[in-house]
Length: 69
Image 1 (cartoon, rainbow, N blue to C red):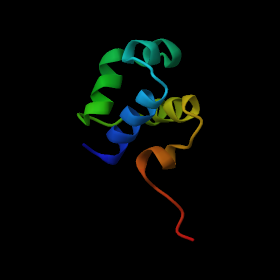
Image 2 (image 1 turned 90 degrees about the vertical axis):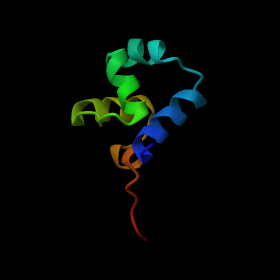
Image 3 (image 1 turned 180 degrees about the vertical axis):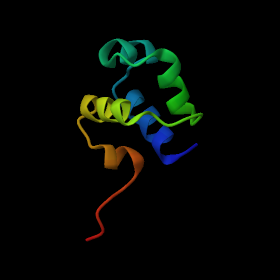
């Protein structure tokens, strides 16, 4: 499992959401959401931004990029 897929799964579980509920809230298909969480493929930039906005984070955080201070 990649960092991104693990992060997406963890965020969804922390909010007690099902894939169906996340689909309804984001407009991203169930098949796509499932594939992202299983690491089968990465979201498009548009969907990555939708997910970041929904989870109140950044795309960089979702993919594991952090500033080195």
